[in-house]
Length: 173
Image: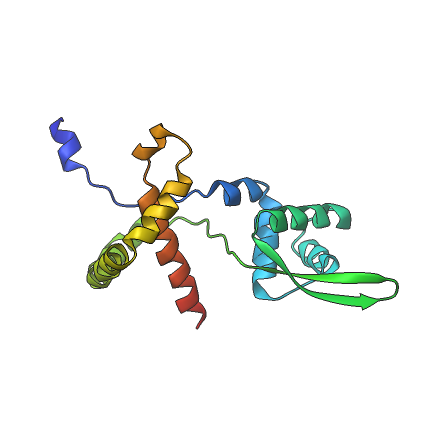
């Protein structure tokens, strides 16, 4: 290994859930998720909110995108209302999409926050791996479609998923 390799440190992990990234490949779908994160709405109401944002699409196109998000598991039908010969569905996002970049000026503050929280994260990871090792191994085994895949970072992905979802629950309380 060259000296430059030993001086380089891993600083971040980019998570790409193929189910999510395929569903939000269309930029309007990310907007729909953003709209549906606030409250349950009908497709018509989502269409109106998109129009308010300057997005000119037919209501059928909006319905198609909502259905794609629902099929990907990112949107739930949370309520049905019967009326005037039909059923109205209300949709609510169960996932938010964050697609931002931190400014370089944030580096020092971010490093300070990392230093402050790292001991608790280390403890959480130790708890997860000590107490849930068998469950993690079972999940990883289900994720490996072939022998080559043993080199992938499936355990890291499982642990990040647990931490990410715990963060969402904590931030909503």
